[in-house]
Image 1 (tube, rainbow, N blue to C red):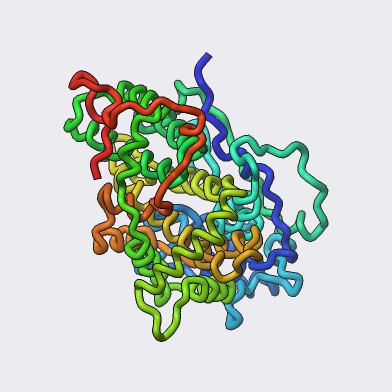
Image 2 (cartoon, rainbow, N blue to C red; image 1 turned 90 degrees about the vertical axis):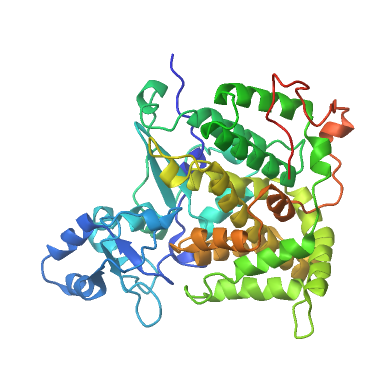
Amino acid sequence: MPAMLPRYAAYTETFRCIGSDCEDTCCSGWNVPIDRLTYEKYRAMPAGPLGALIAESVTENDESTPSKTNGCNQANASNDAVFAQIRMNNANLCPMLTNERLCRIHAELGAEMLGHTCSTYPHIVHELGAAKETAFALSCPEAARLVLLSPDLLNDVSPAAQPRSPQQAAAEPARVELEQGSAKEYTRVLPPHFLEIRELVLALVRMRSYPLWQRMFLIGLMCRRLDSIARGELKRSVVEFLADFKNALAAGSLRPAMETLPLDRAAQLDVVLRLAGLMLHRSNVRPRFAASVQAFTAGIGSGPSATLKSLADQYARAHDFCFDPFFRRHPHILENYLINTIVRCQFPFGREGMNLGAVPGRSIEFARLTAQFTLVRGLLIGVAGYHGTAFSTDHVVATVQSAAKHFEHHPEFLKLAYEVLLESQMDGAKGMAILLRNTAQDTTTARSAGAHLPSPNPFGSEAQPGIQITP
């Protein structure tokens, strides 16, 4: 029997919009994209109060209009998907929003009259041949809670949905179904070794025998080696490399070399500050995100007399005494963030790399993933420093959600984030180590259990080259 496409993000099936109870409505703060088909439906509407409001508020885009969609690598959104947009009113709210903060189009015309973005948000759906893969936009507070706080995200498929209030039912978008297809059906359109690589990446994210920064670094190492194989520089097959890499992970043979990688919190914080400064003049700064930024800056000791050294020292204290103790108690939170981002961004292939015949750029995709992770973790370190022992999951959700709404929906964010890494010379292996490493010494469960630690080259001969730590 052929293998089925794993339901990596089955957790998205349990989402229920909380409607007017939401603390940060999705109907504010941005222009809502309208696809061509929906726009044509609106143009054909009969005269009436709602039709007049739609005609006044929905405008066709020209080629220069930035496309703000709810995916990853948004600049690649098709023209038909962002054919028009709903302009926000003077209060920066969608004019279709009622006093109860529910959608008037949905209430009066039904879900079938919603545009694609409105009907699927916060779901992000990727077509995979005969199957679909779904993740969440964490700019939705309820989606952020569902993702970040699940103790076992990939296995967290709740039974029957809980009863919903009429308001919640009215606000809920059309359900996104996840279809299944056989391996034979979808391997015709997926990149080679998609399943094997994706499964190993997700397994690494959850491999708690390694500290999280090492798991991330190992994913980057895997991406660099896969790119070398694709370029013909490493004379091994992908299947052989993945098998050897799994053996090295199980043996723990790469740990000693990773312990020699640099810890430079000042350089790490400098990049966090650069990333946090992106989009400030290109995107609306919403009050919820402004509050998170204020907590972050206060938590790292920002002020008129602050220097990078003083900020880095306070950043380190905030990490060691506030952030680290909290996330040691809740290790699933950042893992879940990474899992959702991996599916959302189709990592390590990326949207362009999912096309057959595309030139692999997995190292660049890893740099983009690292930039997002570094930014979110850095903000959380500062926010944890600000709140101290009162730091809670509510602060985590608010920080991640508001940052996602500010950064992830902007079409230029990933491009600019990668440029920050290039300008800071952090795009290579050594730079990735500086961005990822957050502790001086790691004691892992694998070591305490007496795991065998052979030499840095786990294969010991030229017959099995290719897996070494080289900053």
